[in-house]
Structures are given as C-alpha cells and as structure tokens.
Length: 364
Ligand SMILES: [Zn+2]
Ligand SMILES: [Zn+2]
Image (cartoon, rainbow, N blue to C red; front, side, top):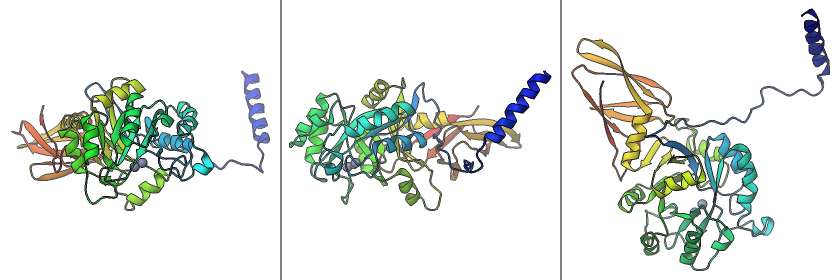
C-alpha cells in the first residue's frame, strides 16, 4: 500500500513537471455542446427532430457541407437533409457541377456524429408559377436535372423520392397554389408542404395540408449559419434557441422509419414556440408532454401541479385565464373542487387557419 502511494505521488509529480508552462489550454474556451429540445414518446412513437431543407456552397448557401452537420448536431437534430438547388449554383465555377457532392462530403461527418443524413435536392423554378420543390430520399441528384419541371419531379419520384412543395408564399403577397402545383399534387408527385420556412408561417398552407392530405414540414432553409438567423429573429431573447424543425413520429429510428412516417403524415411543424399540423398529433403531443398532479385541497378549491416534460413552451387558456408553461417547468393551477374535467385551448398549436386544438382531461 505504501509503495502504491509513493508510486501515485511520483506519477503525479511527473505529470506536474511535464506540463509546458508556455502552452496552456485555456479552460474557459467554449466547448461544442449538443442541446436537444426534449420530446416525450407519443402514443408509442419516438419523435425525431428534423430539418429537411438546408443549403451549402454547392448551391447558394455560404457554408461547407460538413459545417451543416456539426451545426445540426449542436442544435440537437436527429435528421438532416442538405437540399442544394439544382438550377441555381452561383459558386459552380469554384465547387464544380456534381449535384451529389454536398451529400457525399457531408455523409462521413453525419455518420461520425450519429446524424441521419437524407439525400435530397431542391428543384427550383419560377416562384409563383412553378415554384420550388424539395425531393427527399433521392438516389442521384444529377438524374433530376430536366428542362421540363414535371419531368424533374417525375425523375425524383421514379427514384423513390418524397417530394414537398416549398415556401408557398415566399417572395409573393400571399400563399399560392398554382395550376402546376395543384396538378403535381393531384398526380401524387408532390405529397408534402412547408407550412413554415425560415421566418414565414403559412396558415393557408396548413389548411391545404388538411384538405389535401399533405404531410406538413417546418424548415430552416438555412443559407448562412443557424446562429446568425436565430439571434436576428429573437433579439429580445423571448424565443427559444431552436431552429424551425419538422417533428417526425417514427416506429424506428432509421431512414425507413422516417420515410414511413412521412408517407403516413405523422409529422408536426415546430417553429419558434409554435406547433402546427394534424389536430390528433397536436393533441397527442400535448397530452404526452403535460402531466397534472393533485397536490393540495383547500376549502372549495384543489391545487394541481402541472408539469411540462417537453422542451416546448405551451400557452393555453382555461376558462378566461391564460397560462404559460415553459419547457421542463411546472406551474400550480387551482380549480374548483367540484370540477371533474379541465378544458384547455392550446394557443401555440395550430391545425387550420385560425384554429387551435382544444384538449380536455378528466381530473383524477
Ligand atoms: Zn426555395
Ligand atoms: Zn431552399
């Protein structure tokens, strides 16, 4: 034992002397942290945090593909798609003309970080007439280049792609569904729609998603770095630090699992404290997130501790009173002892233009 102690002391001293006083790593340097938005299991499904619309220097983005992966990891994403424009590549002279390059450069980094990278591209035509479409789960972006936009979407479809209609009101006065877009939806070539893109919410597109059975998406469509955009959106610090994300309800955490969920419209669009999508999934997410526990009874009222297991801040009303329940927090709510059921209007959730889900719970 004594020998062991001396040995430890010698090793410790050697370690001390071995330090180079002229080169010290400064401990206060910012480390790369992954911060995830907490999400509960919902009806047996795992909820994945996804961004299916991003750009790099291989189209008109300003970062290298591996940077998108590291940034996605720090932002707590599970799934990322890099969707460089086929038809708009201002840096082509410098980065070459292979439309698969951004995916191939990003893939080793995505594997290293455990980010699921979906191969994608953005078919980019005149906004307001033909529009922009993201093709996800493609095999070869080079084979999607066609002068006829329908042929481009058909080529993506033939590769097994899931195609969504991007930012339906971007650079326009209102949300548009043109003849071409309607025809592509009717033919089944386009099956999803962005209800949120960058800093724009499209309530009309949310109504179309319900009326036409389209899968909803919220995308960053990031061209700069995510931190540049998040800080400029929320200078007062009231918003969350998370980018717009598509929440995908999967049976299994795999590409097949994500694809199956998109095919079956099991997604919600999350953007800056709001959640939009199908009413049943909004209600299920809220009910899985928020727990009511009776804590005390005084006279004719009962106090409940209401706890939010998710990282989403919920805003809701009960009767005429509005409550804000922060992510990961609890609040105390008192109700009349005789009340057996609580009815909550969830103000930060949206399933149609101007419509919030109403959730009722039986109090135990
Ligand atoms: Zn676009
Ligand atoms: Zn884009």
